[in-house]
Structures are given as structure tokens and as C-alpha cells.
Image 1: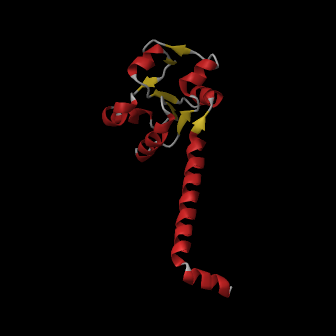
Image 2: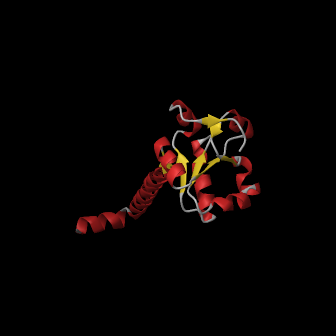
Image 3: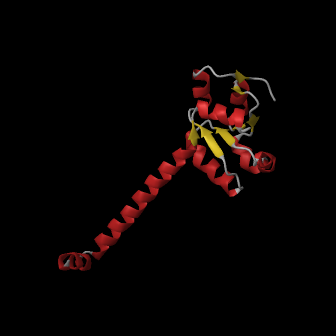
Length: 144
């Protein structure tokens, strides 16, 4: 025990750096773990749509959206979603939300902003439209 106390006294900077490293490592591990809890696969999305009246919000660009999207999905482009459409999205607050993202790197931004707005059940479709299409699930190119 005296050796530990002596080591900490002699190498306090090293000990503090080790504690900081440990804290940040745990923080990023937990953040990564909890960010994947909101990812759902196609079958979970279908259950949410059919039984919980989930709203599918497609955040891809307009041109990509027109080439094919999930039936009855709502289009709010990510670039302007949180500037122009935030009031329009409030209508869907009571139902679960399934986000379709073009880039999974944007998921943290979307989740943070929607959770600050009071959205509770927000999910991200795991493989996006690509995974939906690969499984031969219905897509449409008609507007709602």
C-alpha cells in the first residue's frame, strides 16, 4: 500500500493522465454502445410501421428521394431539416420516428436535435434504403 502511495506522489502527472485516458475511453465506448441501440433492421421497421404507426422520415436529397423511397415516407432533407422543417416535424412527435439517412455519420446530429425537441422514440434504419431495396421490400417514386 505504501508503494502505491509513493508511486502516486512521485508520478502524479502520469496518474492524472491515466485517469483522464480511462474516463475518455469509457465515455466513447458507452457513447458508441448507446448510439447503436436506436438502429433497427427492416423487420423491426415494418413492425413499427404496421403496429405502432411509425412515421418514416427520409432525410436524403430530393433527387435521390424521387428515385425511390418507402411508401408513405415523409421527405425532410437533412440539409434544411432542422432549419425550415422543425415545426412541420412536431406533428409526428407522438408516433415513433424511423429516420432514413444517406450517411450514417449524420445519425448523432439527428438524434441529438430530435431528442432536444422532445422526440422519444427515434430509430434509424440500419442499412438505409439500400438494405430495404436489397430485401425486395416495396419502394415507390410517387409523392405522398
